[in-house]
Image (tube, rainbow, N blue to C red; front, top):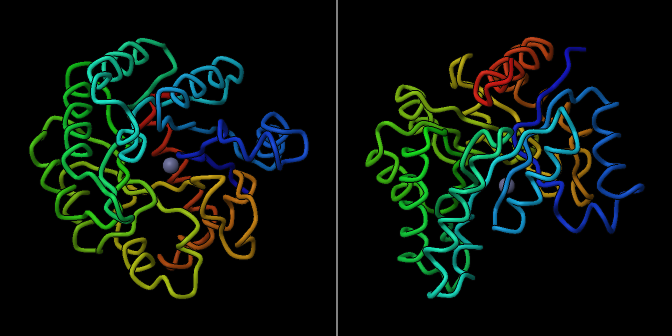
Length: 263
Ligand SMILES: [Zn+2]
């Protein structure tokens, strides 16, 4: 079987230390032994961004991204907004930081501060443009506003991660040079829309991810997810495309290496 690239993981999440046998390092080693050659560890807060960089320092096959997730951005005190953004920009100077993310919009829960989310999304798009890095976007129940923001920064490209939008929007984003990444839900029975998108993304824009410890694929729903389960998602994407496993494994591996600039 062709090795895999997990384009979106959160090994700094406390659940790995608490619930996985051998903790964070146990999970990472088990994933690597299971055929996951590379992992992108994704920052979502200042703390997790720093932890991502530390993991990238510790493991040659881990690369980092740094950024403020829309929820984490809502937790920052009004007085610290600019300092938080400055720290994100400083962290991009580390050699193994290959993208800004995850950033974006999430309107799913009550108490959403759309203005605050939009401020951080836009400010981090500007940092990406300034430092010349791509972005990783989290978008939930906010497809229209996310697409508007993307169009405001035509020079910035990136990944729509754990994609849950329409196939039509996926097609438009790919035409604009963006990548689309699929996670566990592509294996769920009721995820017709996700499968439809997975079927139409062009070969050179397709990625897979775990988003672990979240979104475990079938047959591990309800468990702690980790990169060792990525092959289920790879098979789910292959099924949606009428392709075989190795074809999708190889495509997504090469696309992720290109995106994260790994030679
Ligand atoms: Zn994530």
